[in-house]
Length: 202
Length: 117
Length: 107
Image 1: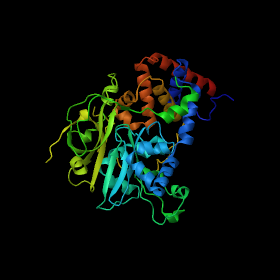
Image 2: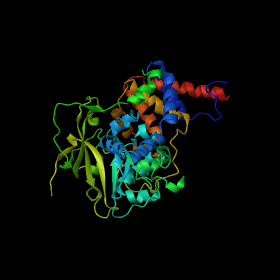
Image 3: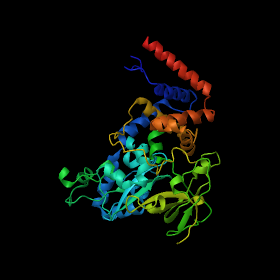
Image 4: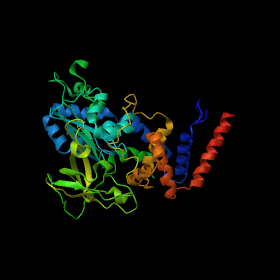
């Protein structure tokens, strides 16, 4: 069986990137083994469970939470978190007065180190264009209603500072372990388009 | 060429854009600024919606590689970077969807002193 | 530049398609495009600011009608040829070879 066996003919897109890849390998710019290494890290190792662990720790440990809000990059290093598209992290705390949500209107930058790769909707024109001008309307599409008196803060990630939302801790979770708390933290709650699961959910 | 064995380390290290520069930041927390209206025909990270708008400095992020220069072969030319808050009404006018603000990271060259009124 | 990518505040794009929720690469070509892009950056072929600028210069209609990773593919072709890592002719010749090989495989 050849390495290239497949049931459908490859699209032009597949041929275009294959052409580039083979030329780059021949020119000594790309190590073919490195391609699969990168894909493995981004598909299987990085992802929102990392961010959920950070949130759970912040909920459980007030001193850590204070450090996290003061200097996100350094506090995340305590947990061995950092690197590409997370070199400069700022954590945004949701409160009864303030709801935070992140976007990159210009291109789709996203905090890879804590959330992995973004969902397609985050990179789409409807989200990128509308979340800055009508956040409540967009959040309502996500099933989230924000009280009139609460301020919605939209952070547009236009430089290399990357953001993550620290959602509010659900009621009725006192004395829960970090592991159990982490299970309540959804990816969307760390983007700001959702809130964590309620205590009764698990 | 990045070899396979170095990929994990490279991803864990990333490519920080923070740099040391010789000038002090011009703006401080709480300063009112106005974003430039100057035309940039090439790459910039000041979105159109925030041009010529009044905002407030809420944080200083250090000096970072300046994309407007770095994207067109002029080198890194790092410049002071600030987090700036724009009231939603300033950006979008009255009748927008509720109390809110948009925050952007803006380089010093995008900013001038704003009117307090 | 006030490019098509500079879309913050534009209205009329309609509802966010929440069903597009997946974060995994949908097809192998997306994964390859992502990885080759990162490796090209690591090899110093171009920098991230050049990469973003390249995508902004896609013809607007194409930008809106293509997927995120197609933007990345466009900028790879643009920058790697502009920077002389390979020529347009080399790229097109390689694509033609691969197309012919596919035709042979199918036959």
